[in-house]
Length: 314
Image (cartoon, rainbow, N blue to C red; front, side):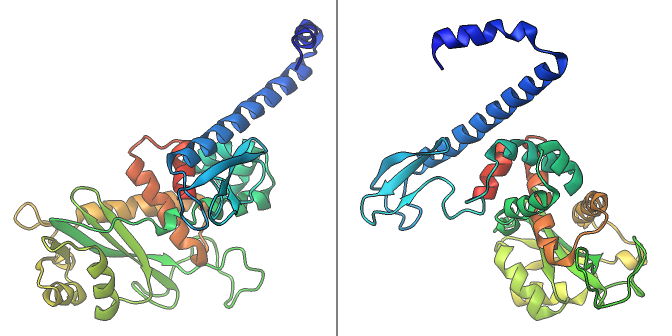
């Protein structure tokens, strides 16, 4: 804007009504958020300046699109930006991303997040699962020393479907029997004493399933600590790992003042209490919510919208 025109515009501010002032504040805040998103996206591109298509580092600047720097690969001659190939590629309304990420950090429902960020409910739903696509795949890959393992259960949910394969039940219903069944979804939770964490939705508790998952994350020096389920003892024997079993059913909770599964049980409790705020989670999307919770646990109170967006882009 021309300097003379800008000074004239400033002189008109005193004539604005209260409503007009609020509208102006909203527009300025939106502009600031939009610039923040642009700056973050451009900074991310400069951190690892390689072609998103062929990973070649020989690239050149190729103009801007909506304030986002684009690049051109000098070998493949294809253009890209920092979001190309990521779950956020093609999403609009970038000025609302920071507000929406903050709403997710606060654990807001879809309706609340949509209202806070000024987007439609269907857009809020799409954004939620785009943002969680990469975090759902992020897991700690090596757990050391004392490693606790246990399973927890969630009721099977068809939330969001128009046609249910079973009769509807009242909210907060319960399964007919405890443990794994056709109406219960099992989540294996594994955690070491340093806070490294792994969890996954599993179809059943048997040796092939559990041993395959634990083989991905247990370090050779790990000591597996579990309840009395025989599958954990068999898994430890299969991989020649030390194993300590806690007979929780008999009222035993700690052995030798160090072996227990209280850390993983505490995580299960926090996870279920946190998920209750969403009034049920569709089973199809449960892995996304597990990834969301892992992000919160790792952040230790330092979770910001920029960190969330970085994890979402990958």
